Length: 312
Image (cartoon, rainbow, N blue to C red; front, side, top):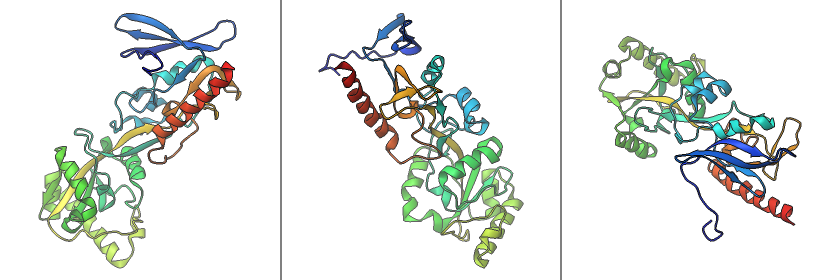
């Protein structure tokens, strides 16, 4: 950018898209900075590259629902999505705004128990199993947000599971964030440490162990479909509190292969482009790891190639 003499303005928040009143083409943006309001214009238009709305509770409530809005932020706290709303006057075709990626987190500390949550049994504050522990961590996080009080679950494991080599980094990460891990030599003692019901937790663990031994985990309510379920037998026992956490949203204005925002009639909005999570139509339900920022880079380059053709 420096080599091309492209100015970069910091601490400037976009508040309005500007267009040519003669033809409706988007030609610039009005921003608010510490100096007040300023206007910037682009020769070929404006590229929306500000991410989704994963840190905006109002937008999450309206578009993805209350459980999603109640998730602590697991991704960036500055991705608040207002820029997506700025496209409204041009009637963009907005898609997949109910879709998002989530994962487990201990909200107060930011600790991530990623692989731990698929190793034992998950119970709510009421000391009841509420989800199938064979689901992915994304699905379990959605269930935790939707099916538990205050979006809190507890993963219960024993010493053998705790010592699995594959979980070493997870336990280290959790402790380095000073997130609580409750530990006791009995299930009843563990329940007291974690603030759960001792009688109920003993009942749940015994029922799980018996079903595992009999090969009847699928008959539990809810069923447990884990491919490699582990017993909870060897002391000490551990309880890991976690929540479903919001990572990133997938929806926004639909774009074509040139990165142009499409209106509700499927026509490009002149001068308006979007990339990454500010655009819709690339991801839904889940995403390919590493593909969100990559897609922003790829489509951003495609936009540059496209506007070169306009200059000819």
